[in-house]
Amino acid sequence: MDAIQKSLLEEVAGLHEIPAGAYNIRANGKSVGRQCSANVDIVPKTDVSGIDIIIKPNTKNESIHIPVVLSETGLKDLVYNDFYVGENADVTIIAGCGIHNGGDLTSQHDGVHSFHLEKGAKVRYVEKHYGKGDGKGQRILNPVTKIFLGKDSYMEMESVQIKGVDSTKRVTTGVVEDGATLIVKENIMTHGTQYAETEFEVDLKGTNSKADVVSRSVARDESRQMFLSKIIGNNECTGHTECDAIIMDGASVSAIPELTANNVDANLIHEAAIGKIAGEQLIKLMTLGLTEEEAEEEIISGFLK
Image (cartoon, rainbow, N blue to C red; front, side, top):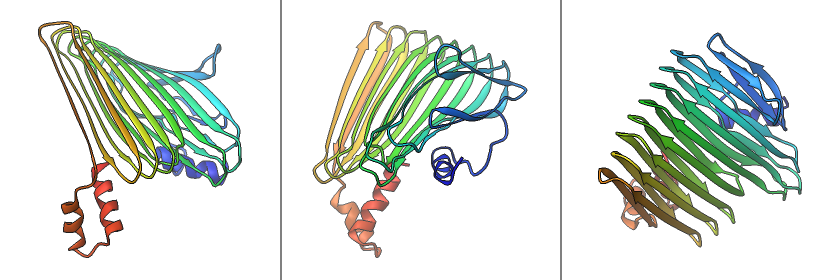
């Protein structure tokens, strides 16, 4: 890997060197490094581009890294990754994609990730998206995440996009069985003329199933954002979705909730708030010695944590 690719890898996966444990590192449409562990098998697909990640039952305290980096202008990459998590496993999966585009052509990565959690399995999934480069070509990311949670399983998904992505459509779907829980935390910042669209659809299928979907975003300059969330309660269940956005300059933000209860014991809640930074917050920080610009950045940083 060259210096640009290594820099992207550090941004999206926090890697300064090859990680311990299981990993698959993809650069410019090809695997440049792969390693299995005693409890995790990574198997290349034979019909499409991508891998199967098979995690054995009762695997504990392991991290799996599967980052993607693109540094070739004009490259359009599509990958399918499927995760099979055995009963009572408890793992962390770190993904993410970084694009450096120094040319005039569009660079794009589309990733389709499917998660299949068996009974009692637990997964923390971290996905970070990042773009850079001084070329005129766009940097486009379209991640699709499909989640299937078996009985009493638990998945927490952390999705972050804070810089350099010109256009993105992020689609996440979930089917949640008896006693299972899905937690989604999303942080997005757009600027310039960037566009970000997020779509969630969660089917609370099982008894005592739960979902909590929270998006926090900042829209600056002339950028546009759309947040669409659907929670369907098909059983005795609890569902909550929330969109909080700070709007600045000439930006535009839309939040579209959709709740459907098909059971009398479905408890579903949606919350949405879009607004500018409060003047009193700025004044308070400025009295402590910060400039207005520094105060804004401090408020935004705290909001997106």
